[in-house]
Image (cartoon, rainbow, N blue to C red; front, side, top):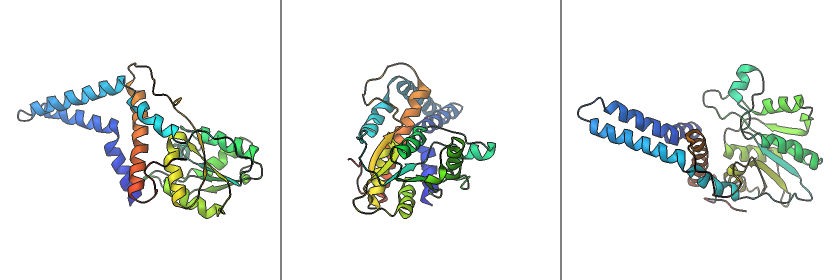
Length: 263
């Protein structure tokens, strides 16, 4: 139930959706004699906020602290296992086309291959099911297995976990497969901005993983060109708010023991 609720709430609070709803309400109220003044205010307010967000890099300012929380570490001398989180395959589209359709965060796949070669004796776990409410059968794991085989990688090297729907379940189900022991070094691979929440979930399962962040979208600085780019700015703003809200909600639900996990 909480999985469906989280998806529904995000649709409502996504900044792009929220601004569009406010603008639409404002325009509709313009046709009402009684509420026309309120409609003008809502339309003007929504337009002003969109203009500000298209100029100021607010999303970048919120994204940098997430990506900087777990900097790239030196490769450990010995690694027992590697856990790679999914999120780089469009599972619904892939099931419709019959091909593996890739989305963002593709560096997670590259890291899986590179780290598997660097640590040939390490166990490798890929964790990714379906994050779709309408298509729960569209699991990412078998698609990644197919893609690795097509790329000439020995997919039998990887243990695939294909039931997890979110980061909490990534940690829970991956631990069941890994059965990690105290003192072992396990690398956790996911996007840099997602790493604080992911590490918090694994720590909540008493699994002190070593962060291996990839898929950086900023260089760690707050400087950015002040141009007009509504689509780009809103995309980064939505991604950053998604992670910050995820951190808060996971902490409230007890899925992490820290509000903003750190190394």
